[in-house]
Image (cartoon, rainbow, N blue to C red; front, side, top):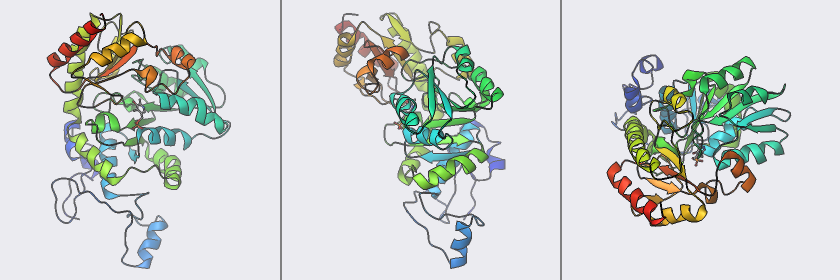
Length: 401
Ligand SMILES: *Cc1c(COP(=O)(O)O)cnc(C)c1O
């Protein structure tokens, strides 16, 4: 190993965030490559039998198998941990692999999990359908009702699970309040921070225990790969997550980890510029539609709280029109913005959650979480916001707005 700059935690933890994003975790091979190397290997070889025995016994550091460790993936994990301000991080195959592992690694039959009602469709499926199959009780609550969290606690409550802002209703959870309630009751908070990334919001600064990611979203940010991550204490990652991860295998592929590493170098720039663009476009859209759900606009019921917790409003907002026909008419009239259900991308994208990301839920569950037939969710990218406003103007007019 030649001189490396990114692996000494004492040193890297003193870097400011922009430096961490570019150099954190960098681990150079003997070739001294500038850009992180991509280690496409499933296994490792050893000089002698005693070495491999010592590694398997946990007595010696080193790689043994890429389900457990890979140098490229390890660089990503160290960089995300640094950006998050977490002791440790493990990369995952996707955001949903991360959510599943974060919950199943610590919950057992007889435990109870309280989750936010408004959530990404697959996150709700975990809570409504998967956990109960294994004897784990779940309750869903209105996450914007600060008192609802404490009311939902039972003697066996072990985890609070929520997103803020939530997908696609942009509900904002009061992180300090909810994390304090959890701590007072010995409950672990699992925060899905996909809408922000550590560039815009670091839930651990408000007391969160575990932060889980779809790195597919802002971290890659260019619509290329699926990936996920779980950040937590060293103890949680080693003692609770790793036994689950090691033996079930939701591991991030080295190629995907490498792509996300490259994405992190520009994360801060993208997240802030996309937030600025989303604010400008949102201000235009607000004047034309009946309802807009945008944490950057004073009309959002928790705008002040959002401003306190988030460094910027993020690239995503939703708005509500009359019904499905009008929502679909807007999508069909777009010329620049793509109809697509991804978010965090540098391209502006729009989708109709009721028939896409939340189509797997019952109509009642959608209604209860505020995902109506007239809702559209928007991801604002890095295009010139004036071109996006022109596209909105055209599409809203075509739909009679
Ligand atoms: C996209 C998303 C996920 C799932 O991530 P994948 O990488 O697609 O598996 C989970 N939570 C939220 C809030 C998301 O937006």
